[in-house]
Length: 593
Image 1 (cartoon, helix red, strand yellow):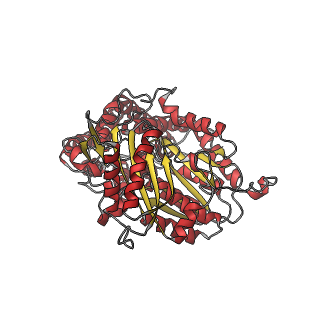
Image 2 (cartoon, rainbow, N blue to C red):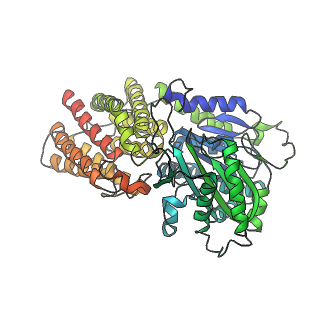
Image 3 (cartoon, rainbow, N blue to C red):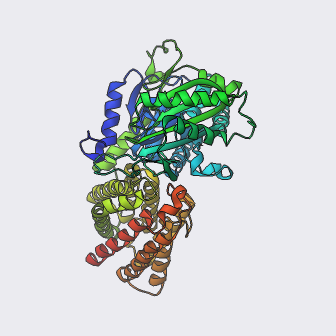
């Protein structure tokens, strides 16, 4: 288990602070993560990677020449926010555009996509690429739904090496795509991981058993088998991967592959070497030429006891990029000359550090309530008091149920829903308080809260709750006293926006299964002329029933989807938390009626 921490909520920030202090030769801190210590060469594509904390050396440890130009670092097992990614990408940009790369998880897809839109709006050409290498998480016919695990490394490296060669953005993206379709991973685990501050692991494996087909966020495996010997584990990993070859690799014989045997946190290196000796022999027997193998911890999951095997099937071009030198805190290969003197860094990075500093200043100013707020009517400022009370109720109910939400989420997911919701709701309440203190109207209070919820929570829930609050804020505005009809309109728009952003619909076992009927019930009640508190009460009752009903559904989206059967009988964590929130807000509406 994780033993050394202070405040669990500060763990990711403090770990990043210590990392940058230890590795100033390679990296420097910026808001949201790290970038190379030296400026991106003028005109070179900046490869910016990222994901949640808890996976070191991914992602910050892979920043340096020959690999990433920057890494956005989220909270534990939660994607970085769009604001963090924007900040890191802006600081890393060297004039050649930006390629954002990440593992294929819903939260990362949402936040990196939103960040790409913001970066492009700044006039910087931007592309995105999600690594999807885990064959256990979806079949070959649904490969786009696969998770990104240890295959992140060879795909990141191929793209970054191409960028180092001076290729333009579109060609760097094509290299990433080529490496992605030729990369497959598969893993097993012997015990789950324990998050900082938690008193139990996210999942357990019975004695003398192993979990097969694990993820890297503490998700349980797809199935269980008897505990193998080292050679039996190697045979399972190799045979499973050789059963699924890329379309243009009909037979492994005579083919080359980059091979990674990855430790997930607490399997010792000597154990990895015992397994690798058999992996190498089995691949040799199959006629596979192994190119520059890597054995060690490269993409971890805190203290999970597990291993994964990755094969990237190489052609001449991919082999050249895989062999290319790299120099980062956690991954080094070959030899690189001394970097160009950074005597004129200010000129070389003109606008980059300034933009990042401005982003930091805006964030800090918003947190302290010192930024100017739009003019608001007296009626809207009074309504802002009710909004603040509602957000206070939200933060309190989430805090009270955070452990329960984590336990529900851990049945088939990664168990971090309660942690993320607590971070997001408390940050939203603080931002709302600061905005209300300086005279903001209801709309501005909600939009400030939306930004901080998304920023501090990260992950899928952070993006979706940011969208919900922003939709409500836009509907309420700062000019008029919001009536029941306008609130219902905002909730309806929030429901539509969440479906547009996340792609889920009713029946997918997500928060949408509660949000849609809640919005519909609220709209119907207000259309009948009911006052807001009464209408909200009716809709909250509908939400509670809908959340309970998700226990009978099988997940079709998100991290729970590969573990669909395990989730049967348990409600969706996001749906349950939304139902709790709707009831808590009703209490605030009664108190401020």
